[in-house]
Length: 163
Length: 163
DNA sequence: AGTATTAAATTAGTTCCTAAGATACTTACG
DNA sequence: CGTAAGTATCTTAGGAACTAATTTAATACT
Image (cartoon, rainbow over all chains, first blue to last red; front, side):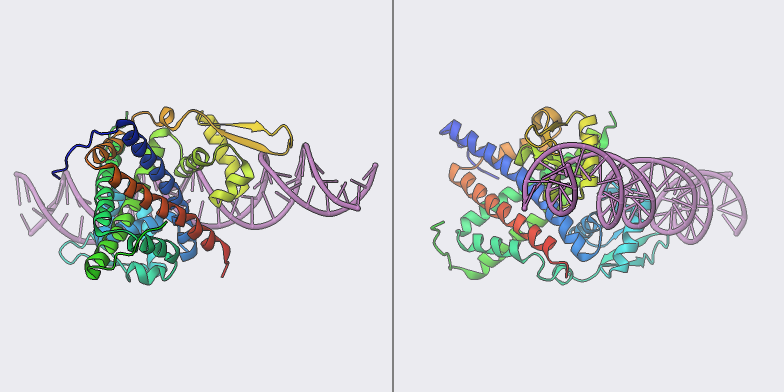
């Protein structure tokens, strides 16, 4: 990334780093609670919504791959896709080249599914972005990417070793 | 907050804002998957870990208040606290002034419970913070706080209206 | 004191997940 | 080819965890 080190005022930096860590944990907890509420409002389960998030990010996937990515069994994924299809949020398609496979396509955009449900946070986010410079937005984006890349490494490591 | 507006280069700002939103959603999805894996490693359920997060943030709570904050029933909380006690992560204490109430205390610090489990993300976070200026850390903290404050409003709104 | 209220636990029933096996399809080998 | 082995999803049985409603216990009201 070509960033320089910033060693000045050690204790202040350390305190800021700790504050960021604490705040990130708070956000994670509140995000989980909000997601539960959103899922309930959409008439699906929290795990179902999580799978939709994975599908939105990764694009259409086979059932088996979705099971891998989520850490669920294929049996669980069958039920989840049943419910998502029922609710009109996804659909099954057969892979023409390998008819054992079932490709799960997300239906509609995230916006179409949730409507204005998220508007309180979207408005807050928008307001924050309008009140800050492009450089500052870049900084936040850099932080989010760095954090977002570390998470799958953590998840993979935790799932690996049975010890 | 006393921030000035930054209207220059509209399309670039808009794109940055959208990128931040997308990245935040990615982080949320990955965070949820990571939390599941952490909970599994600790031998508890995802909801149990979520309740621990609420307890860490809000301090000791009555069972009823924990049910309110999480959106769960009191019956569910009874089971969760049973499991958390079993695993040594929390303990029940009777309120001396009102003996109907059960105060749930988190046991140990988060660090003591999870050990080095989170180190991959902590290391990434630490590296990012070392590579950026104090002003940039302040910016991220400001973002996280703004986002973190909006989430409970969203949750409350979604839980309210039964329509 | 006696009724109403509040807090948590209990119970019965439902939903969702896992583990194991069945089914359907594909690939590899003799 | 044709059969065996492998792969992908679905099905089934059982268990864990949640909800709604009730019960038990403590407190507040008048």
